[in-house]
Amino acid sequence: MVVVVGKAGVGKTRLSLEVAKDFGIKYEYKVFCIKSMDLSISEDVAAYIDKPGKYLFLIDDANELVGLKLFWNISIWKILDMI
Image (cartoon, rainbow, N blue to C red):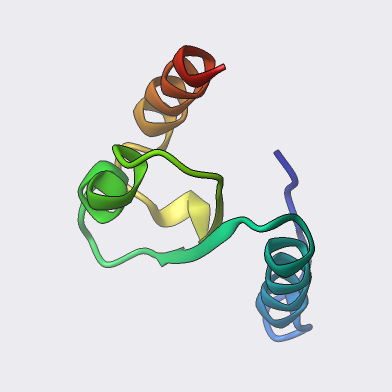
């Protein structure tokens, strides 16, 4: 997990998107950006995480997401099951 911090407007999201895009291309990952829409994060990614593949999730404004801790715990177990 990588956390990018800084003041509003300094370019954290832009930098993260560029790095995620380049990483996804180089290592053949499917890249998804998740932004808080007042839904639980599990609802936002449920359609993607159940399918086999390599994924990189960029979570923008993670501090605003509902259920992030639960999502993280479930994701780790799903990843371990795939190994």
